[in-house]
Amino acid sequence: MLFFFVGKKMKFKKIYIEITNRCNLACSFCAKTTRPKEWMSQKNFLKILKEIQPYTHYIYLHVMGEPLLHPEINEFIQLANERGFEVNLTTNGTLLDRLSDSTKVRQINISLHACKEQTNYPINTYLNRVFEKCEKLNQNGTYINYRIWRKNNEDLVKILENRYSIIINSSSKKLKEGIFYSNEAEFLWPINRLGEGKSIHGTCRALKDHIGILVDGTVVPCCLDNNAQIVLGNIFKTPFSKIINSPLFCHLVKAFNENKKVHPLCQSCSFYEQRKKNTNDE
Image (tube, rainbow, N blue to C red):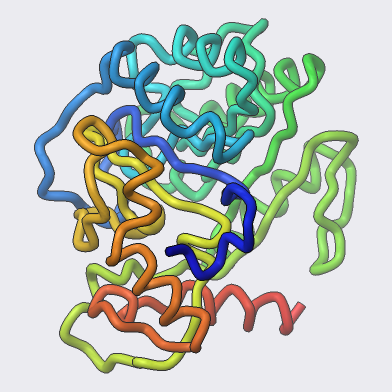
């Protein structure tokens, strides 16, 4: 019996779908995964879309890995569009040229700080390619969000200011119509904090407004469970409707509602608290 559906079908604000856990970079700020490297097949992607269709309108093609590395990225986006989903991407920006100019993507988040990890070509070359492609996609209705870590990236902020003729401060998130930036503190991956001081008190938006599906079909509570520490089920073996009614799912949600963290990974995670602090500081 569901204690939080209140007589209506549960809806997630977004569902993360990891179409690949491969990446073309090895950024120092990104958690590594020991899971086998895979590409999601079109058949499995369609299976997921069918399972989650009643539960969300928004999908994010990212957990680990670089989604634009997937050889069928444009086909996957089109398949999702045809089924009524709004598609969002998070990318390091190095492979934006793989996106068709006519591709219908609701929003693209570009981690510009990834360029600091580049050795193949100069930062300005990378940024100019990113800006040109993003501005072209923006003309077709895609929202663009340039993401920058706050620490030691003042040069990137300056480049954005020059590009869009604007002075960036804590209240200026809009660079031009449909193009934004977010300047955030670098978060700590909970997997890297396991064994450190833990907090059993706290809540999270995981399982309330979002959930994640890994490339092998494993369903996890959020996009920070990079190594599948909390396995809720497998969408290729169990209907999604049963997974979100499982005892573990309900136990975790009930605990969050009571301001409790019951799983060691959650106890090691400070993401939600850090984001609230950053918002209050701005």
